Amino acid sequence: MTVPRRTIIEPFKVKIVEPLPRLERAERERCLAEAGNNLFLIPARDVIFDFLTDSGTTAMSAAQWAAMMIADESYAGSRSFERLEAVIRKVTGLPHVIPTHQGRAAERLLFSLLVKPGTLVPSNNHFDTTRANIEQLGGEALDLVCAEAKDTRSQAPFKGNLDVERLDEVCRRERARIPLGMITITNNTGGGQPVSLANLRAVAEVYRRHGIPFVIDACRFAENSWFIREREAEHAGRPVREIAREIFDLADGCLVSAKKDGMVNIGGFIALREAAWVPHLRALLILTEGFPTYGGMAARDMEALAVGLEEVLDEEYLAYRAAVARYVADGLERAGLPTVQPPGGHAVYVDAGALLPHIPPEQFPGQALACALYLTEGIRSCEVGSVMFGKTDPQGRFQPAAKELVRLAFPRRVYTQAHMDRVLEAAAEVAADRERLRGLRIEHEPPFLRHFTARFVPA
Image 1: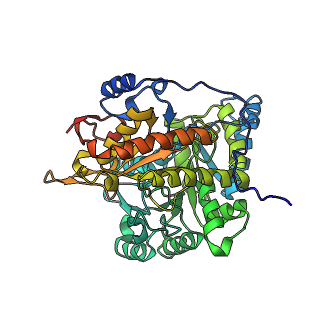
Image 2: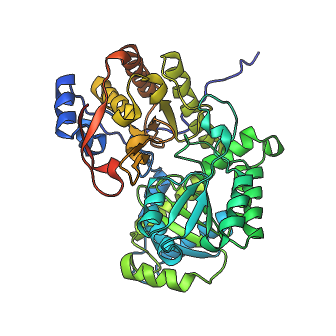
Image 3: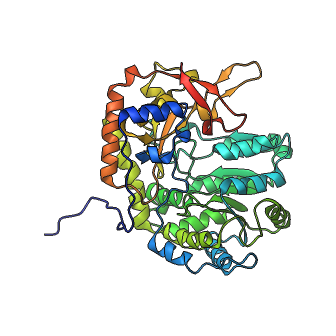
């Protein structure tokens, strides 16, 4: 009799290895103090488990490394760009491709063309650089995520959905202020939650009815497509590649940081259906990024990206990717750390506000938890709460973020289950000692994106 196999294994073999750093707690205490309690400022050599971000931290495949060897580094008319352009057109169906060195460069180019003081850009949730690029130009980044997203414990399958009724109301009331409409897949700010295809269709219809161009922030398009396949009954078992193509077919264009589902360490692009914006975008590209056939990327990176965009649609890989997040989330729950449910694909989000109710939002419970994880086992995570999204109103009053989360983002094809087990052991230690954790206050912060370089001291 054949015994069914239920364990989802890593669908790859390790080809090149890198030793993990080992630091004693006293060394980690010194590192954290020198970094001003900001994990972004800790050197990578002093981090054991690096879950700060899944962006640009992918382990590339043998096929990607092989492709890099045939790169055409010509300044203009590179064959490597032609290969990348062909793959992007195949995956998205969008004919006009503008390469950039990463996602925020794509944001800056597009928003420089469209966003002016007083304009309004709706989405489910804008992530940090998207919001900052809009606000830096004098625009307003409006979040319209669905009501289910507010409940971190709800098992609603698509908590990244955009509230269609509110969107329609905003578009009706503010049409003259809206140069483009967006949606982010998956919804990173809201816990890595996916958006259903039904919601994407409805959002596209609203934007179309109001004559608003629809641009998708699609850096995790493959993971979102996988969750549609797994959680949306209408699309059960449907090929992921087919779902992804339908998503892009709904839009007028997309912005992509290729450092996520592009499976590479650097790169990005804009892809558009119509040519109207293209001449101006290419002029800006030449001014700040490079010639339109490389856009700030080396040809070898374009070759790796062309392969990565194909590899990321492998369904065995996507099943494994989602299983990692589920495994870690389940382990954290058993250890007493509440997580955003259901788990997304690229990360697990711990609800630091619920874990540490004795630390008020103005003392940044997420940052306190992230520091504790580092001190315990050299785990680098990312606060997604009032450090990242909190504000001060014109009257000087603190406005906290909607949630106080800590994100453990998993680099693609890097860590094994044994690594995750060690992380779960450390997290259990932190949870058991949570009453002793204390809050922080900001000692220094920059005017934009403060979470990258702010420094903290104990409150």
